[in-house]
Length: 249
Image (cartoon, rainbow, N blue to C red; front, side, top):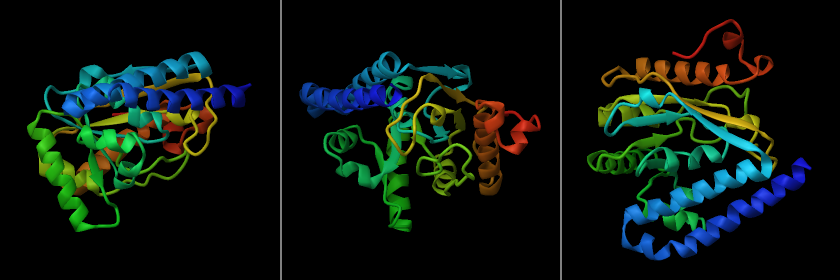
């Protein structure tokens, strides 16, 4: 039954993406806001399907920790749904994503229209400069910037693998960084089609103020995200430090 529900949801997920992509095309052509509204509509349809087809609910915690104005949000990444949630949590988020995703039909075109921030992980310094330039523009527009610092989905229990791009954004933009803990991998396979009933928690943690040195920032961010994400798991799946009683900061 889980497999059947997962297959039905897969059809729903990509079917609604195609439908929204067609229906919202005039609005998306007119402005970035129009394209973002399409992303928000698809996300809401995806969450509706997740709840009523496979039994997945989403709980958001810690909204009060978000500073006003533009901010850098650095989130754990375990499943595709992590990349959709910013569209219902923020007005016009600027999400850092892999350049390869811009080549996807419908999704890639809309990502360009929404002025997402692509990064070519093979281009080194050139990619970093382009990412920073796009991020400065987004900051100037008052947008929330969202990055998944590990760069790709990590299964529960995998060793942390945080890339330095987030530190470059933090230093260059001079914004507070809000770490995000989550547990989406419990119900949504990162590399597969199975979707299981359960609750996904997206939790904003205590902000890291601007101005820290690179190493201090990276350590604070990783510790908060990892401890916070561990705390959202069943005790048997937690990392040793979480089982010893270390919680999120």
